[in-house]
Length: 406
Image (cartoon, rainbow, N blue to C red; front, side, top):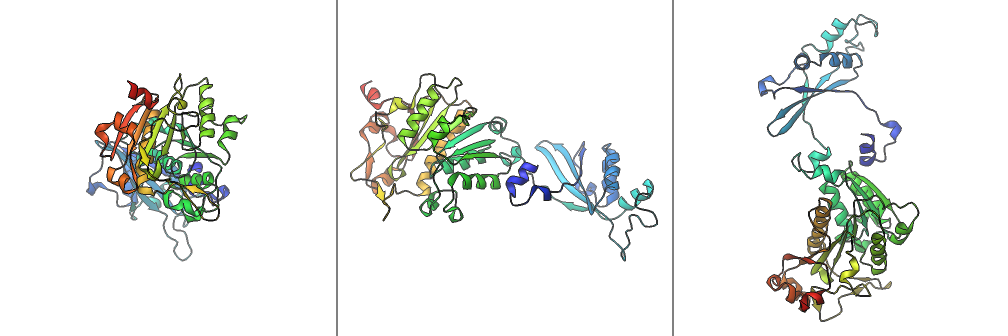
């Protein structure tokens, strides 16, 4: 609970957190509406029938302003929960009716019981569950136990890695490790989960804050560092992960990651994801080791043997003054790609996809052509049925030339 509150409201000092006791009363059957407790006596009677009245008496002796009693019962649709509140009798002209006529420590048990659990009204209030199994699937998603125990490292927290990290957290992954060296800029805002309030700060730090605030039960670690330094560091922060998602889009870094995975004694999958120009197509590759490598489908410079689109003109654009290069695309077209990468990561965690699987998202053909592109000859050869676009194809990660020769 302290960890949850620290994530949700980090500005509150731990020393100021206060916890009060309450009681959960589990009933055999769900009460009908006429049976709902309307008075403090009704609440006590329910606790007595459930065999926990002694706990209620104990809490009454420590009572502050109110006593919270949660009522629960199993239904065919899962547990049903409601809360009732027994309020401390109000002061009358500065006198506390709870101890009137007695010293505070000498109030007889029967008198205290009558004054707390008499006919005074009990308030009703709803219960808003925010525990992981409820937040992720309302107790009905069988994947949550596996995902909740998983640790995923996301390398690169930009326009691909940032949305993927958020999606994995919302899907139920219990722990994330974020790695990125860059700071967040205004140009990032339009296609990233972070907003203008994060401009000038480290992407990893701000993204970790955002995930912790939105989903306080998720554990998030971060390394505001180059991926190379993290991989080669002596503490081995990635050694115990269940999955790595690489959204680096940088061949020197991913080449090192590919080499690093090959020498690991423990096998675990890495999902690589990137977008083609204008986000007209996107790729997700899963590599689990055991002979499979990222470089199997790339040339010596890190360019894929298979690209889905070709462009008559240079697609890269450059910012004024600093000359930083970027690909023009927005969050809508990119969303299909980040969803595919995140889905591939979930499939890898759940053991539902084989190593060396290559998934390709294709935008609508009309969109590609309007942006000045066309489908590549390689794509036409391996997926002639998908040329209308708005679809995903799946193949084995290998040089396209081999497929064409076959």
